Image (spheres, one colour):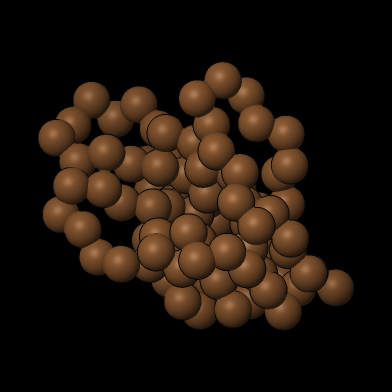
Length: 88
């Protein structure tokens, strides 16, 4: 049986960005996760073009997405493991 307590998120990296670009991702949605901690966590969702309230959409090629790779002690950008699976 799999460990149900395993964190399904990984830190957004330059390799993930490259893989997304190579696999045709055009947009990234940024969604704040409610963690109730000092550090703010945001989930990045690839190819999501429709924002809900208080969400932001960036072109995958924008400088704003590249800036999400910069290290910060107060903000972390995460990717759910389901968005890391290789596409056929």
